[in-house]
Image 1 (cartoon, rainbow, N blue to C red):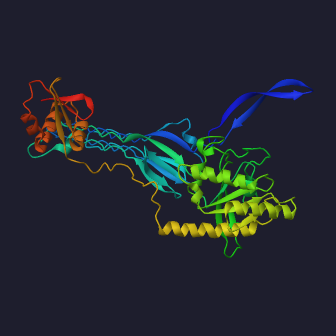
Image 2: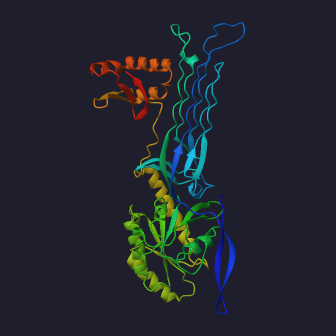
Length: 459
């Protein structure tokens, strides 16, 4: 856990005079639910050119070993994590590179995988695509694959090539930026205006300890609580999320904005809570419904139960009148008058929330959710062997592109005459040299591969 300490100046009003005192305070558990991270898998190690040399043994032959594979970047969903704060100041995660090969046909050590634990409910996005959706505890996904190690010269021996001086460079590991977005997975999401009693309810029915106070925006971060519904024989657990209070215009960024509306997306059921002390319960209900509807995904269509909160201390006729107004405004078949402090009306509400959540889970299993199709990452084991050649007549340059030939070019040491000769042989077998010959290029043309403008081969 990252801890930041600061010294603050605190003004104290004492007898009309302002006294300045120094106070030490600590910031802990900073809640972060969206961030960008650069993931870098390990590069493969290089193969080497080596020949066996021992006393009394002449012409020992090539014994250059292969390079080790680079490590993968692996994301693991964990219930022990509840925030993406670990990436707040660490914007890059990098796996270990593979080691180079050695003599005596020694294979280079592979790079260790980097295992990154993220909260359950984290989506890994790249642009508009969802690469992975980590929705289950201990779910493991390879987010970036390490590069393969290059072959040493011992790999290239044959009956006609008994002393090769060819060694490959290792492949680069996959590197790209991803967006991590945490969407809390809960059975029930509590929504309502600030001070509707959401935190008080969560603290009353679970072991969660959200901050509770009589002022707006007491809850600045989502909180989760586990509620046991039923007796010991058929008890079931209900996961409830306290979503920070919304206000009119929240979906447009006002107040706490729509930062936490994303956490409502995955909840099975919403409990819409309205303060019984409100001057207009119908208006309060309409405000939240409007914000749910105007979010990028219409959340107002989710199953909802409606509760009238804080009824302790009010006359029954006032409670009945407020409940009737709220039922008329919401169109709900039932409004639940409750008091989190006295626990009045909580048991029927919890049983109905459990039943509604169970129904939604069954419906979700029968019909797959089409939102956010998971596509995964590129499978580097499958290589397309198509290619193309373009001639830049103005600069007398040739550009060869294609997944397979570019990969061979990246593994080639262009400072090695034998390595370049091997690449030329590969191009000839693929028909690339024949295509270049037909273009009647001028003498001295340089051949580049893909986007690499540093390494080239003379035609």
